[in-house]
Length: 133
Image (tube, rainbow, N blue to C red; front, side, top):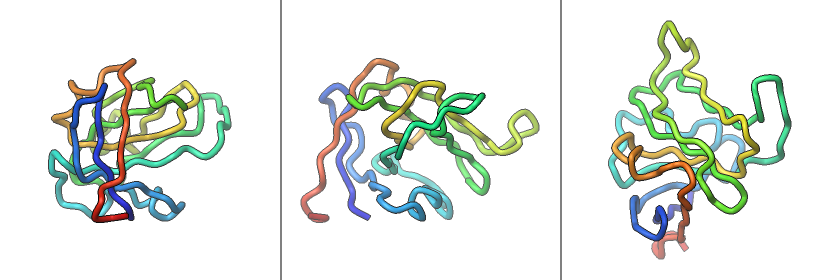
């Protein structure tokens, strides 16, 4: 996977965010990791906007995850539509399922400490890190 540096409204927030290009990479996401540093994360482009009763199909699940994460859904202009702290499954949310009711073009998963740095309406931008080009 290629990795990127992420910015929120032009301010650097994370320097090792992987881009999940394949369906398998998107499905695996951050599974299998024991932890996540403040600099790490993953993001992908949402392919298509299929509307369901509960919203658009851009959901993530936390089954098998060992730690909570910040999840942000972005529109086609990379503006944040929704941001949550996704926690591991619980009685209230058996699958740890989270989605956005608006058509998102990107989903970004980052360290929970960045939740306050990614407000709804802010713009996330990224650039490919040189060592992965």
